Amino acid sequence: MYTQSEEIPREISKKYKSFNILSVGVGGDGVISATQILAWAAMKQGYKVRTAETHGMAQRGGSVSSFTRFGTHAEGPLIPKGLTDILLAFEASEALRYADYVGYKTHIIINNRFVYPSGVTRKMNYPNLEEIVEYLQKITPEIYVINATELAKETGNPRTLNVVMLGFVSGLNLLPINRKLLQENILDLVPRKAKEVNKIAFQLGIDKARKIRGI
Figure 1 (cartoon, rainbow, N blue to C red):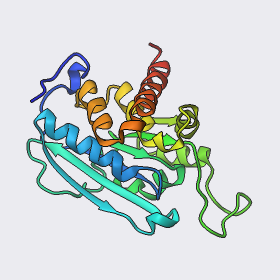
Figure 2: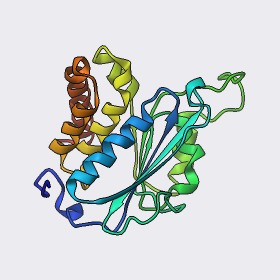
Figure 3: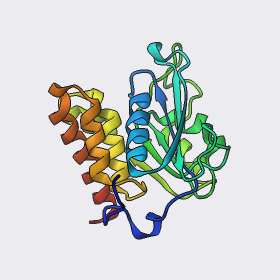
């Protein structure tokens, strides 16, 4: 079992009764894979873990959401509305779709990419990024916007989007999970030929978060 380390900030290094992460996006974003990585890392950290997923029309780019709950008393897989600790939005509009799960203590990380539903164009009445952030700021001030898709492309493999997002949230020091353990689980769950590119993606996310934090 891994123990807590200096990679976990002191204020969140205690054992949680329940820590709640809601990951949302569209099919192909790697939402479910990100949940698997988080869940395995949390279990190896010594937490009790519960997960639940809704795929929708994932293969057609439809909405996908995945709940990850871990702690000493994580009894149910679904996060009660308003009690999400971290909302990871792999696609910008999905952050708005799941606003009911956001509370005043929620930290929201939004990838600034939009995937428009079939028949919807930018000219139609569809919220832009500024409108989404403005709405969510009425609930919580803890909102971060990241160009995760572009960072993933920098690795040469856009499918590393989910790993960039995990690196970013880890770099913000919001996760009560050992960073080295999280990276190990990423590398364990990807094919051998993709290990190096995912390692780069994880570090890009961390570096982006550190830049935002000014360190």
